[in-house]
Length: 490
Image (cartoon, rainbow, N blue to C red; front, top):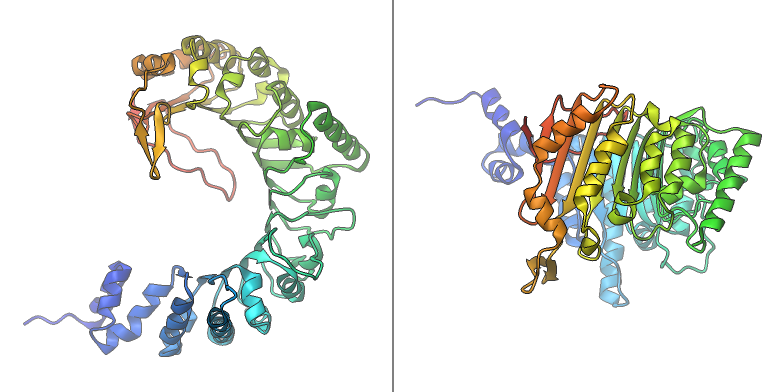
């Protein structure tokens, strides 16, 4: 009989999935001692109160070989009801979390902590904030349902955090006024913070603290009023993301234009960023911000909630002079058949474009407006690809996956009486390979080296892609581009 050495046995743990690891650590003392670390070293998510208590017992039964290996922890605590037993259970869970975090503070190396519904758990155990503040190895903190207790905890932090994500629960009722500007309660991380994400908060303001090392800022559902405040608070910013940032009460183009001019005038008087590496968000947000510096990469996701016409694209491109432009457009007819859209690419500011990505989404509501999709696709070749003198990579995506489908019990099924639209019939006959070659040959400057054409339909749900020339991924610094469908190389 051949026996494997202990080194070989332990090496098999590195190839085992979590289910196999659970079985192995119950077989012998060696696996029980060494196998647990492979279960917890990537990330642990505890989504129920009983899971928190069970995990605490698991960690403390051999804390010497388990506590040091937990690196990332996510806690999703049950929302307490008015039932007395439920309240008691939530308070008990909060106490267990406090004890677990204190153990991690003493002998652990936790680097990322996420607490979902943070205010609720702090109401159950206010001493929990002390345990969080004691986690000296922590570098990333994610908190939702931020209320007064949570903001007080953040104000007490002296940990050298690198990344913070906070989300205010707008429906969270409290008699205590909440500090709605995170820059006012994150001062303990002022010199170390690199990335900040805020949802529902009013970030920055005339009295905001300066965070000189923040390079990535994400603003979600946050009214953007004064660009100059962000320039002051984050002078070395490189990456900016906004989601529904323009003031919701302003719906007219004139009102948005007035805000834009106010922001541009303030930047002329007081200065702006030297440059930005990347902006991601809506055309409306970028238009209102009126950023006057060079932005290397712009990714715009526009939908029916935004009211600006394609002419606003002229203004933001003239401001930013990007090398990479990614447009994902839900209101496809507004763009594909609008002369102002094509005029963007004949302007001097467009001649710096090296990489261009266009995505047009065709929905059931607007599919009937595409009677002449062929003309729109011709315009893309003749009025976009052809005149761009520096373009080296072009990517076009057409998505009409949900045309003709209706929702039924969380699934998509075909309408029984669906008559194919003209756009569907055109796309069935569309020769992607021939179109890719036509794009490459039409480029007047002959700089275009890579062409990618992708089509999504309900018959090709995962997408069909034609790739002409080398593939390419734009360098966004710390960001990475998601992978698409597999390509057919022509």
